[in-house]
Length: 150
Image (cartoon, rainbow, N blue to C red; front, side, top):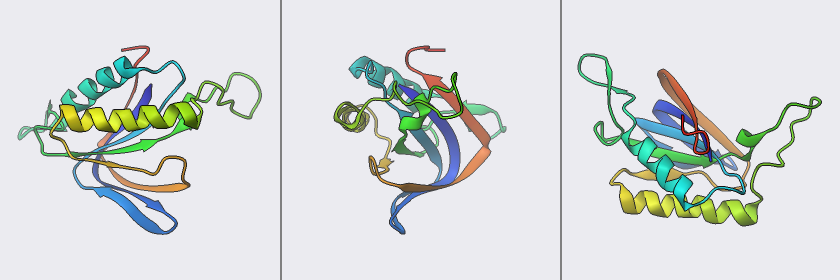
C-alpha cells in the first residue's frame, strides 16, 4: 500500500462537475493498493496517518498530529501510484490491484479508520474520473509504503 500524503488547508474531489467531498485543514491522501495488501497494511498505515506529527504547533514546529489539530482526512484511491516505469515510455500498472481486489481493501480502510479514530474522513469515488483541487500547506508532501515501512 503506497500513500502520497499532502498536508492541506483545503481539498476537494469533483466528479462530473459536482463536488462530492471536501475538507478544510487536514490530509489529502492518494492511496495506491496492490494485490499483496492486507488488513495489516491498512492498520499500519492508519496508525501512521492518524499519529504523524506534521502539523505546526504555536511555535511553528511540526509537532501536532491530525487528531491534535482537529483535522480531517480526504482519501482518494489512485492506482497509478504503483506505476512501473523501468522499460519504455508507457508506464505499466501490473502491480496495481484490479478493482475486484482494490475496492474491498479501500472500503476496509475506510471502515477501520472510522472504527479506530475519531478523525472525520471524506473519500473520492473509486474508479471515477476525479478532479482533485487542493491547497497544499507548507508545502508538506510525504510518500510512504507499507511494504518498505521507512
